[in-house]
Length: 341
Length: 81
Ligand code: SF4
Ligand SMILES: [Zn+2]
Ligand SMILES: [Zn+2]
Figure 1 (cartoon, rainbow over the protein chains, first blue to last red):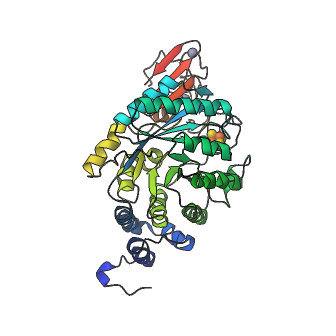
Figure 2: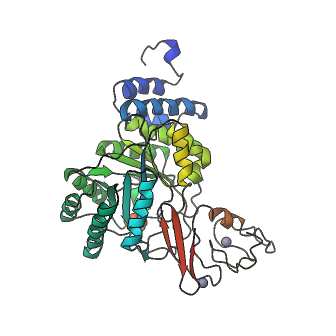
Figure 3: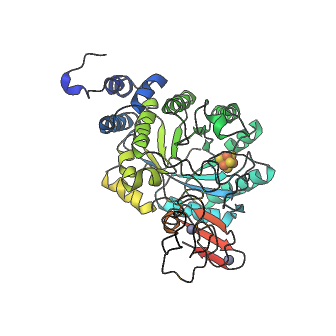
């Protein structure tokens, strides 16, 4: 397309276009362009990741944001997200359990001690009821008394009043994932709609909280639907996108889905960064399974600029030190705490 | 794992430790139960906490935190990482 000096071309037109459009001009790739990235041959993956890394460093900086996540209410969710072991509608071995506040505060302290600046409190619910909101308020106050860390929440779909309350209590970021492309969503969730998810996302943004809105790939969606998802996320302009890879859970409708190909996962990492040059792109669940130990390094050098440290909500992650040591080795500073007032 | 003779049930799938696991990654049909019948379960248990009590196969109450986990059986008490 553009006439480039020979030494600057990768041999792949879409990457040369992306270098100018995304790296130089900061404009994310379109859905059609993302599909081209997702369909690059294996040999082009290193070049795609390298470009994504350059984009990340130029538009987001060298820092890596570290976060811990914790479940305050596990299991027994009335929704039917087909990937989720916490749905009460499937025959999953995950039992319903509530975490008490002292344990939550202890976990926040341990998380902060790793250097993490974010602590996300998650509940397996359709949306919060009064009991949960009261628990959250109490938890936020106790954590703020004892721990220096930003508090994020993920409590399902919110009413406007709940959005306002969370913002008022100092929740600086709210997580609510799109999970998959609009066109694939009905295959994965039937108890609520894509539009309902978008409504919560938009309310969160309008209230001034940072929106964390993630993706879960490898659920049987097509590559075109992966491009669709990346571009739908980009349109929402979230502050952060956690990128999850399906970890097929026993008892869920997707238990036999199989683990996503590692090369496709790497293509997706590059594509998501090229779709959203300025967004915090976080490595989330399933990376250990899909990409193995080496995957963390490849991702951090391929567009990722945030990690979930330690364990996930119901499964275990890499030991926290493994990721923290890797950041030191890669000379990537951990993002420092900037408490929002 | 195969030497853990005191464990009656597999913490991952809840089946008898000496028998065939159910679900994904099960050993091929017809094979007599072997010590590595739960090999894939053992691999899984490196990446997730146990869900079933190894003594009585009750589903446990499991709490995962960023740096650890606990799993509690109403009869046999708490295990932790
Ligand atoms: S709403 Fe959340 S907790 Fe409930 S089934 Fe869906 S993903 Fe799981
Ligand atoms: Zn087993
Ligand atoms: Zn027991």
